[in-house]
Image (cartoon, rainbow, N blue to C red; front, side, top):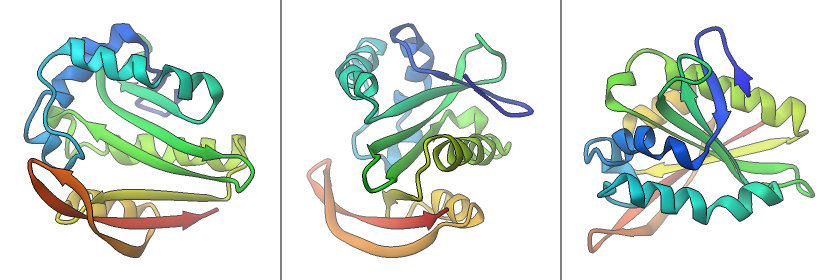
Length: 171
């Protein structure tokens, strides 16, 4: 478990699905995500199960963010595509709407970045978000990430091709 002064980041488990669904089932939260809002906690459970192999192999680390060690998830943060040879990974985050504007994402991301750089020995992190997601842009820039490019038509969502923006940061 990773900790900050206000938050507890614990590895995601199947029994977190109901809490995670609060965010992933909210169309406003999922507006800038690769996939639309999920329809059920069972769908969330399926997604968690699908990533089990990546988590077990160390290619992904995925945490739920809570206010107490065993409390309900208010968000999630992950390191994916962890490449120990090239010492890099992609970082992602998603928080419930009632957790927005409280600094939780910044606090959790800061801790995960420190974990990646100091404990995993990574030298580079990247983040990708949908064009127009100004909140993610502001957060990443505040964390020292810089713009690296636009991936034109990178995601097909709801029958529409969407651009994604790539940001990166070195240790």
